Amino acid sequence: MVVMVVTVKEICDNVTLAREMAMLGNYESAEVYYEGSIQMISRLILMIPEPLRKNKWQQVQKKVASEYNEIKVLKSMLQTLRLETNVEVPIGARRLRDEPVHDSLDLQEDTFGAPHDPDVWPPPTPVDHGYMQRNSFSKPRLSNLKKPEPKKGASRASSSNTTRRSDVRSIKTGKKEDRPSSSKSERNPEGKADKEKDVDSNEKNDKAETEEEKKFECHGMERELADVLERDIVQKNPNIHWDDIADLHEAKRLLEEAVVLPMWMPEFFKGIRRPWKGVLMVGPPGTGKTMLAKAVATECGTTFFNVSSSTLTSKYRGESEKMVRLLFEMARFYAPSTIFIDEIDSLCSRRGSESEHEASRRVKSELLVQMDGITANNDEPGKVVMVLAATNFPWDIDEALRRRLEKRIYIPLPTQEGREALLKINLREVKLDPDVNLSEIAEKLDGFSGADITNVCRDASMMSMRRKIYGLKPDQIKQLPKEELDLPVTNRDFEEALLKNNKSVSKDDLDKYEKWMNEFGSS
Ligand code: ADP
Image (cartoon, rainbow, N blue to C red; front, side):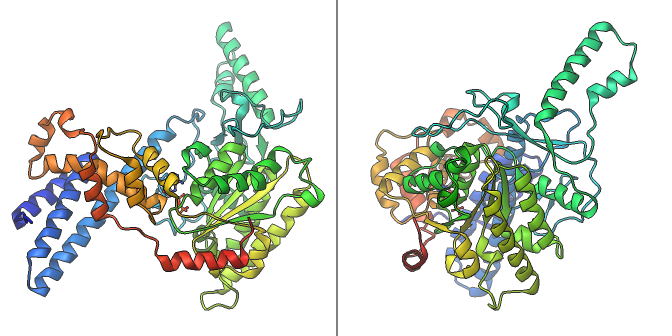
């Protein structure tokens, strides 16, 4: 085996370049340099015999890796923000924070654009209320199911192939909004006739639109908490469709039956057929549970409340139970709604267990009360509220809550067919060498989760570029023709990526899930 010699100077140069690129906002190149630096340090570490020096270099590597991660997070955030700019937001409206695209992306920007700790919320600030949230959901696209046409005059948006204004579910705060168009007409009462006409028609449109908007009224501290919920928890169009999710046919079918159909046919799902109070998705991390929840909200066009348990427990200490109550009140108000609670185990660890803390006990009790309240509410047609929860640790869930999450479904590791589909989804934007056989690669990925497979694909698609730019200076890299970098992904790239990425779920973990599902599962 040929071991390439690495010098400390080379490492320093690469790290310096990575930082420079990052400072200049050139995150793509920064990533390349960070990746290269980390690899070089790994090689250097292999060559160092003295433990003390080795340890020092491991610390350096850790530091560089953490900077690299921050750059990745920043890049994803920018992508999210870029996507957001495509969403229709009225003039003067304050953009609501969206849920990050990546599961790993926990950093969000505060009002001033600086990243802040996701577990610490700022105190409620008086909100200007000059914003209006628009949840733009698309028409249900399930191939095998037809949504009944809404009745005439019903408040739900009508179905259409294109997203029209009336298809947009919007959430508005209880206070009056700044309306640039009307204030303009007030300021200029003697304006030109055509301008007045424009203003008039704008006002008419606004009025028609306002008729479809509902206001969630509450006051004082509750108003502020509601604003926080609207800003951080109500998610705009999650834009994940069933087709974006590979495999998991059984899970999709169960979710359709348990969540989607009751939303579409509330009259049918009554009495003994009443919808489940809650659905729990159980399975190893990175198998697509969050994606499924987002697809449910997208396909149903429901208002989507995306809550992580840590949000409810650690943020806003002392207000958590109020937050839970308000969350359900808002969900009822904006029904049909889907409340997705991720990592529900951390909210509802078994009662009396060591980790149970007084505050979390109160939050848990409030959640149980609210879930019981859902049953009565769900009898009202069109007012369905569904709780969809996810956990990687089902055995940690309180039995009282487990009972309320009546439907418990397993989200497994992908099958051979699923792994192939995941490879296709992940590699749809890159060129593949004709020798690459995705079915063979899928076999090698047996035991990998969806997220693991995404990582392998990402690595494989970068391999040839890494080899090309290895040891080059930025100027030389910039001069490389695009065709030389954007080479088809080869079998060798996959082999190298497979050496670098291991599966994240162990056989023991899988046995634990199987045992728990045998005992408590219901599908
Ligand atoms: P979980 O909530 O189960 O931990 P996620 O839904 O957050 O997992 O998935 C993590 C990432 O893994 C997704 O962003 C996606 O890239 C990939 N992924 C996992 N499962 C699938 C799947 N079935 N289809 C498509 N992508 C998947």
